[in-house]
Image 1 (tube, chains in turn purple, cyan):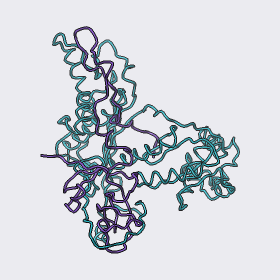
Image 2 (tube, chains in turn orange, purple):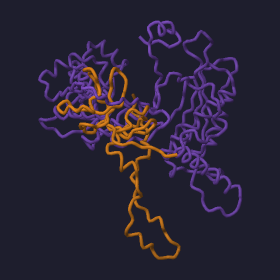
Image 3 (cartoon, chains in turn blue, purple):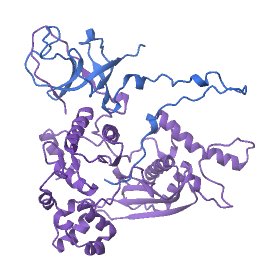
Image 4 (tube, helix red, strand yellow):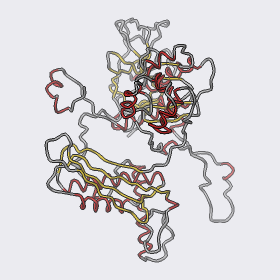
Length: 133
Length: 398
């Protein structure tokens, strides 16, 4: 390992409001004092970029949760795990999407493992993104 | 021990071994995530390499607890288990992190260890940062094989043999900090792009493509740093391990005035190749190095050369040669921004080749799960069932 490093990519630069609507009229635009940054989906949907990953859903078994085949999912590994959350579970070395049921709150509709199988939670699905086309 | 894949194909098959080629895009992204997570614990962080970082933390009795928190959070957020070593100096911290690797809780705080001397006596001297094989061999002749013995060495002796860097290492082992945290990345002195070929080649055309590609890559790097190069070196090598005749040559070309222009660098690299190419050999490795780097705004031109630097285009008044040259100069920056926006390799000089048969074969590379939309993992959905089942207490995935 050497100490030569490259600079980090510039993708995560914070956008600052620019007086973009400079007019040629000579006087400043009336909106200059009210500028706000444009809407940014990253800031809206991703709370912890370091812990956020993207995956695609395969299959329609969780349609009732609003997840369809090929949907883009935002997974947060640091998110709190609540009863009923849709989680990415690691079972037997494979990742699966399931609804989580906390043991103290058994609920017939959400328990979904017929046997007592040890599993691990890889992350929590926080958003579903679907392009309509 | 390690072995090249093509030597053990039978074993791979019979033992059903999974093969994974390296995926640097993925590793780089994961490294960045770990760094962002670590930053939450201290604003003073030095990313030493792709997988190592130094953090400065205020001394307090709860440091070990903090280290456990760091380990836990990095593991939860990124899935990467890290080892943490704590000490007064960087060199000792590295010793501590090596010890931490062997512990189940992955933390070693030398500040709290009462048996520090014993731990140092168990650390081989060659494992100390700054002491490699070379110094290790001499130290062995002097009877010094452990970190503890090195710590107790006479200052004059180590200074005479290993210079001021060696002395600093010893002082650091004693707890005296000599290496401050470097938070600014030092400017490059030189940058190289070189690769071993997937297949040995003597094909001049393929070598031209390869070197043009490497020249383009180093050009991108120095433009990103805001530098221009004053010298370019091209080198070719045969396979050291083969029984074939060996050939290793390089050509150094001065660039006056210094340039960061992609077209210039590619042309010079190809010219260099002509000087050293010998059709009688099969080459395994080639590369381009740029040295004599100067910041772009400090480049000294001379009276007789038109300036070959990629500046932003000035207002074009007439179509003189000078203005055409300036227009081409800015082309490098336009290429850079197109490749940044639309992906690496979107637009490039034809000399860098289309098919690139000489390229490294990454036949078994794992997908770029975190940097390409097309490589996202597809996870099957499982339906909730109505049967009453029991979930065991989940543990968080590692």
